[in-house]
Length: 276
Image 1 (cartoon, rainbow, N blue to C red):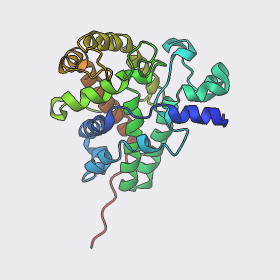
Image 2 (cartoon, helix red, strand yellow; image 1 turned 180 degrees about the vertical axis):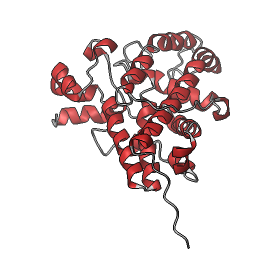
Image 3 (cartoon, rainbow, N blue to C red; image 1 turned 135 degrees about the vertical axis):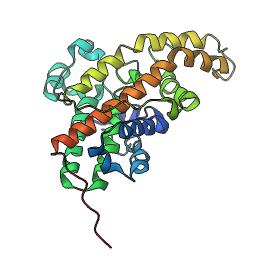
């Protein structure tokens, strides 16, 4: 797994998802949906959590970072045959398993980090751990993070990845139009990432079809395709509800994860600030 070729492949894989705006929205929705107990830990730190939600997208110096953001399902035979442990993944695919994506296991690890942060009694550490967990939870709700055809390269739709998760979000999504869903304790939080991924994967075929339909409005010029306003309006009309729905679900599931981590840590109260 440490061959130069593999390292080059890992470095070439896309890292970005949702863009900064989408990751900020996920955090905002999650914190707003928390009950008062865990919510108190973030008082005055909301902007801090949002500011660092995109940090993992900038960790390219770690050549193993790319696969931490996705899970390609096709190499395993589809969503009904996904491994639940790293050992099972390695047994199915051998040493190649890592480059097919490891996001559900990264979510498990980062959730454990949040539990430890709550136990430490350090609100700054809780905020930092929440930011990082939020990134991978949000990524698990991006449909194109569940397929080998992650950028439409297999269907002559290159660029669809950024058009869906960043282009539509930047152009059309307004935070005020999205409803924060109340967080609920998730007793199966360690298994839930696979459910999120399977649900996102089911959205891939229609996403690609809607991109193709909208793209018929875009002529091929001498400099290649520059998507027209008509393309964006049509793509948004078809996929806007899906984009908003996935952002709301990401916020809800992040809130569930935060609440469950706080409970697993023993429902700690925020330490009193020292008197000056």
